[in-house]
Length: 384
Ligand SMILES: *Cc1c(COP(=O)(O)O)cnc(C)c1O
Image (cartoon, rainbow, N blue to C red; front, side, top):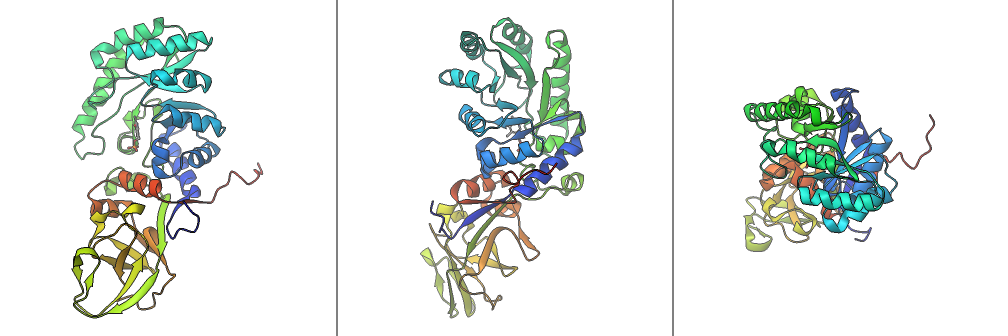
């Protein structure tokens, strides 16, 4: 993507450092924090974010796939890199070479990894995933003891951790999460004699770590909260931990024009002006992740004021109403997500317009636009 594009996603690395530090302080020094940087750090940029987090003290990283782990190692990131989707057979050699830590839930897969590691005289830690109610990856609870015994018999690999995942920790109903935690703890109790010292036990995502301190165990796995968003739009979470959004999305006005009442706007004329209006045409559309769903719905910030999107959002353009922002002119900065002069449009608000969740909004914007990194400390010399 050319650097002259109108649209840019800004990543504030200072906010990322701050969120990480706040989360680590909230869980306390005895709980490790695994920074979830999968999905290109939720659209924020895998390597830049991981290096910033490492600089802030992060020693454990969570990625989805092996290639993300390789990218981190090649960028010089040290510490543990947990691969949550596990490693397919064609990646075993990479796992060994780059000292990655795959999640395992299939014994044939674990046996293959064991053979690959043993062939290189290596010992690779693996984390066993158990399904206590997520209904997705993971061995079923009653299989855990025998699975663990088999893992311990295999050469070249060792159980470095046991994890599970909550499906409903962001729900207002606490019961399912409490039941799942109970089942996980009971299971761990049952297999206690088999668990090696130093095995890391973990289950909490952002919602659980904010709401249920009893889920923190040895390690927590924040994703969305690192990036300054809350896992659900719930004011109670905001009181627990103060987080600052890391991503903003900006463009600029390319044309301003006055039109009369009754003027049809954009494809399908899905908006007809009800008054004489001033319009600003923006060079942003669904090709930039500003989805067509935002037609006649979204608002943007111009000169610190909200302006409504009028009519259909096109591939590379949309139109906003600046009738009440008379000073606006071509070249003005437009904030699609983020702050401008004390006003703010949040990922949550955009998610509501798009009928999705803030997670999808940041992945989408980050994935489809040029990113600019602000407040990068890693290139400056450390003075301590
Ligand atoms: C993505 C992910 C997380 C992080 O979830 P958030 O809700 O973003 O905090 C934690 N654990 C696992 C296994 C994940 O895949």
